[in-house]
Length: 421
Ligand SMILES: *Cc1c(COP(=O)(O)O)cnc(C)c1O
Image 1 (cartoon, rainbow, N blue to C red):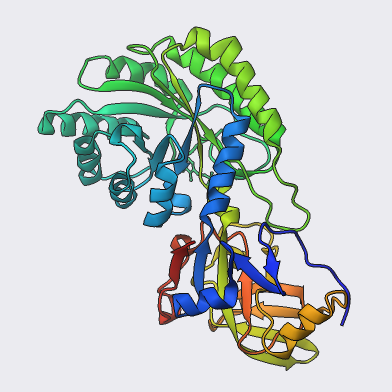
Image 2 (cartoon, protein in one colour):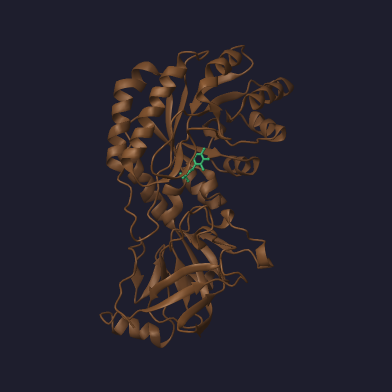
């Protein structure tokens, strides 16, 4: 036993030692859901996060939600009343976006490899298609002719710069995303014939960035690039999607992103360039992870506790088949633990926790999932109060790229529930 403190503060309170999500004790919530493991998303935290972003953004900059971060229908419905638009990346996401109260005019569809069937759905719905290639544009034109509808189109640009500090880079050099910036003038000339309703441009340079200065730099360079490209546009630029990529802290050493400099930088870009040069543009920031990531918790139950040659393993009923990212296998270069805590303290342990709050006894354990692979590791040597079989373990930062970014079919376990509280 040691007195190590938990790795990182999470935005959830406790009552008599039990984790509260949406004000509901985790054990009570598990009863209500009826099964473990499950994902729970806290709507108040999502609302607070949207408010914080809004407070930082200058007037005139809109906030879109990137649906792929968490496409749960109830989450989309909640967000449809809070954000200005939805960005989708498949026909499935498009359908869920249109099922919410978000108007089709405020939905945009990006992503490489859109099929003609998907383009037909998008054009019929009246959403903006963010074209990722010249052949996609040609197919879009055909679809418009077929349906007798002028497709609304924006060009996704593969910028001629890369963003520093992003865990995932989507700009600079060759990319499957967007049309190379140097090709854009020719493409704009082809768009000018009137078959397409030209809206504007989209640049998304990277994801999971915790460095405000890098994000500001990317936004400055994006605006500079778009001003150059806009000179060849067939009409006024009515849509300018500057991307996002705002990151959230996962590991103990991560620092939360500072929104203030990003807001100040955008205000300056609006005042010095965008309002004068692109007065008709709806300026959009698109965020996925940042709006929902920290509002989610994956709750899983301890089914076994075992010692092996000096190490203690808590085996839980969940695992990487639901939370691939938390196991470190979703594109991470270095595996680092997501914040993991004991959500309940069963039986005597609960009494101990309430009576002896100052005792703070922790042990070092590995939290492993139920899959037959050593990759199924949710907590590598984490410091937890002593857990028993039946206790609930919380894996935080589960609101984005959780369930739908995981190989749920692997090992054939049932799909987990998802609830919004
Ligand atoms: C995935 C994606 C996003 C969302 O990225 P986050 O890091 O979750 O904010 C935004 N825009 C595009 C084009 C994307 O593909």
